[in-house]
Image (cartoon, rainbow, N blue to C red; front, side):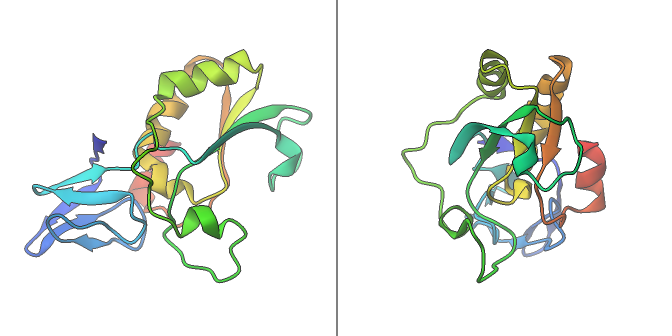
Length: 167
């Protein structure tokens, strides 16, 4: 868990400002994506480092064209989503709660794994990366320092403020 900075106080709780849904979250409750909660008037990222999948994958599998051709990216995902699409190919990740037994993987551990695997990049994919926002900031900052490219496969529903802080 980590305290998130993108929220506003509201008379009925707090308003999450990570994605454009801008969930109004009452004390002790979670937002729609199930990754951010209102704990004592603060937005807490309960999904921080709770990963559902981690694997090295060729960049060509992603929906990118001529982006670091013939490279691999350590691809990772969390749980939950800010959309509910009936055709979702990863519904088992997107529509599920974060299991209690999942161990947190630190940004340092993830970047070290990418370097050990000789991956050239890091990619948040499989489920919606907005659910990992605070984690992405930490992972991508560390990854860039180590010379890794960083990318997202996303529905793009970040708030402008969240998106700008990622770039």
